Amino acid sequence: GENVEQHPSTLSVQEGDSAVIKCTYSDSASNYFPWYKQELGKRPQLIIDIRSNVGEKKDQRIAVTLNKTAKHFSLHITETQPEDSAVYFCAAPKGDDYKLSFGAGTTVTVRA
Amino acid sequence: EPEVTQTPSHQVTQMGQEVILRCVPISNHLYFYWYRQILGQKVEFLVSFYNNEISEKSEIFDDQFSVERPDGSNFTLKIRSTKLEDSAMYFCASSVGQAVSQPQHFGDGTRLSIL
Image (cartoon, rainbow over all chains, first blue to last red; front, side, top):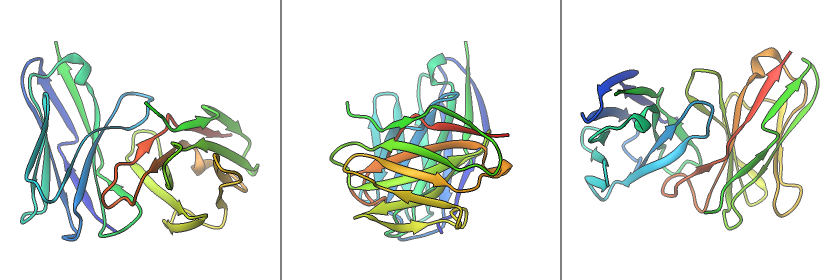
């Protein structure tokens, strides 16, 4: 299946600073890349996704960039706030698979 | 906004017992999934279901596991003879289309504890 690597595993930032999480994937046929935010004990919640026909997508303080040549995509959170503290997972499907392969997750802590 | 709903939120079961986890996917979604998350680890795919049959399953989804859509709204995961290592959070998800291009929406999960 698709192999998704995610870095870093933990990230601590000062409130107001930016946070960047990077993921790489193995299957060049993958063309849809969602990011999920999971607060403690809660469901993974889709926060943003990108398809391979675009290189960047923004939604308020969140952006995702995609480099298909290098097979990596990144989540950028600007002006971080305490409520951004959570575990963030990247994911990718393999080709036309029915499943998502998830990265190992990044625990983001925003210090007030 | 429509949501995927799961019951129960927490299930405690003795090892060797059967357990059924229930999910109600979003009503206009056609693809259904079960994922598992062991405490502190990443979300792992178990099985996908489309058009009343399994479309894909992982190596975790062995003969002890089965899925069913018994009626027009429910989607269930059955573990026939539970083991200690089955203890995890089980998430149901659904999507309008295939994973390759359509977002999957997750339920709140069922925490399964095997004693």
